[in-house]
Amino acid sequence: MVDDLTGEEIAKFLEEHVQEMLSTTPLESKHALDLDGLRRPEITFWSVWDEGTLVGCGAVKRLDTEHAELKSMRTATARKRGGVGSFLLTHIIAEATRMGFARISLETGSGEFFLPARRLYEKFGFAYCEPFADYRPDPNSVFMTLALPR
Image (cartoon, rainbow, N blue to C red; front, side, top):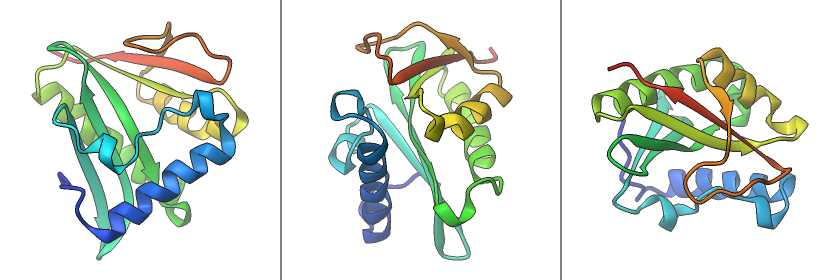
């Protein structure tokens, strides 16, 4: 569901996300948005709940009329590799397509910690690409992109 980012549970979930990124990535390579960053008008944010428990989240940031960026994909630790990420990514790709985007791109970490995420994106057809938008080459980052159906 689209989340307005006002609940305490989502705030805590996102703070854990930012802290986890800081613990695995040098500060200059951290691109995870905090709560205020996700509240910007060009961002649509979704959360996934299972019987009242927050189990995942993700967002799309409009870069221009044709191109969006996938942001803040996170699955609760207890639910990793349980299908939440695939469910959420399927939903986000469908919504990005419905919003009229032709492409969705992402930045994720290059380290071992991020390997499961990279494999998920590969499974969905994302291909590795050069940095996009305001990103610059960074040994701690990889960039991926997916052309959306028209």
